[in-house]
Image (cartoon, rainbow, N blue to C red; front, side, top):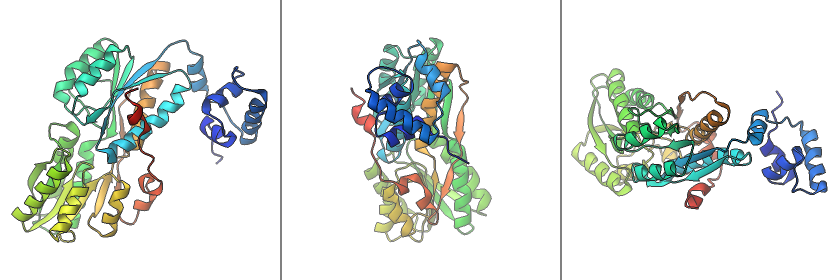
Length: 361
């Protein structure tokens, strides 16, 4: 099947900006004739077909403004989420959508203040990663009552009136990890969970799913401890080391946030890397050596880049074309040593998160 040519590929082939491509295709001023003719020639050669929805948006007189409030840290996960957001923002900015960025330093820190600032700026919608759902729910509810649509991404505020959620269903993550762990360790094994903050919906639901699934697949198996490490690397290392000293026959650990590196280091420091089965969350380049050494047995990949793209697309399409705001639960993937090379975070050089650096502007 022939791949559909989009404006990004056309801009890449013509070595011009997307804005220049738009001016060439639609006969707008601000481009010289030689460049216009070259863009049109390449478009014909590639068989370019215009995106009618985007064209309709560009011609609309409706001004759309969207706020984005997503954490900077832990960067292993949120850089990927921001990258997905940024790629979708670039597409819509060329058609007149305005974006306001108010990132928070880390999950649950300052989000209520930043959301209030976004709402005061006159947005029609917000993409938000709630870390303290109880605290932020009243602000979300006020926004929705005023007609501002809130789409949660990665984590949820389920008690709020938010319009939609884009994530990998967290309980399913935990269920998958629990089943895998039950097949990795022998009967009557003791295992532990290292999480971030149980007040966060994403972390608590993963813990719940794992705790329910593990005993079903490991006869007599028990989750002996659930440890909150608050996404802090030093705290994670310290608490993992203490856990390993306290329970010498511990058979497995499930880290249900992206903060797995200090756990890997603690296992290696105590010479327990091969005896304790470790299941982690997501994937980034620094994890690869631990897969190769078999310190990490498996990881549950939450597709953060796609979450970011989907959240922006869902909200803008609703605001511009009244598309339904249905919740989107992505299917998680299981990463093993044999297939980790297939994932985008390993295949490509990480570009960072340009929006986070520019967010204060």
